[in-house]
Image (cartoon, rainbow, N blue to C red; front, top):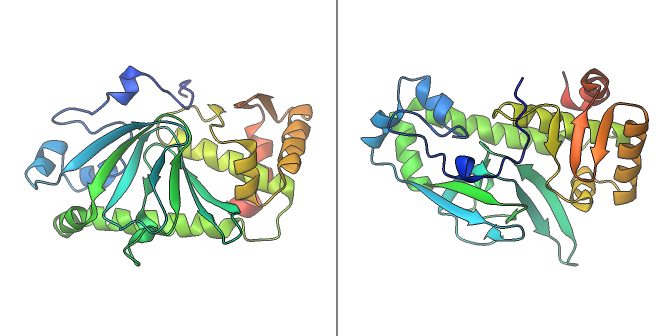
Length: 250
């Protein structure tokens, strides 16, 4: 099991562009391409421009609600929060996006971004022109399936927390989900940093901030996890998984 903790911010990661044959370690589409025999050099022939942008710093806005939709972006490093602000000025957190995950897919239908995307720490992006990646999808069926899969996953995550779940179940599902997503991209599954504020976590989970703090403190007292400011270590992953199971459905 890897011991590399998220966020792994340093020149070695921020400069990891792969090479002529190897995709970046956090490439959102590498699996779809490789499964169809398309290595990085073959994709070069399709003249699909991937623009590496960043670094963005904590608080920087990557796009705003209402901006024209021109591209989707894969997070290459760091964490991005998506959110909307209602007419009364209250923010509603829609999700958090980690390396290898894509933002902007929910803008395809209306041709404008329906939310804000904000960097929570040092963020690097791979920006894909949507018209160009649409052309690529006709050449590489795996890309089209990957886009559908990513859309489906976003919809599924949004629906998971709509049930009448307890605060403990919601917090457990959040931590287990984050653990799985980071592990899938080569980070430690048991030790990571919460780069988002407790207030953002509470907003996303539809809980009061003091409730989230209370649940984390109780889990720490019970030996399920250890919390040191924003650093989290999962000490009893099995218990946490069992608590999250009704929400995560597995």
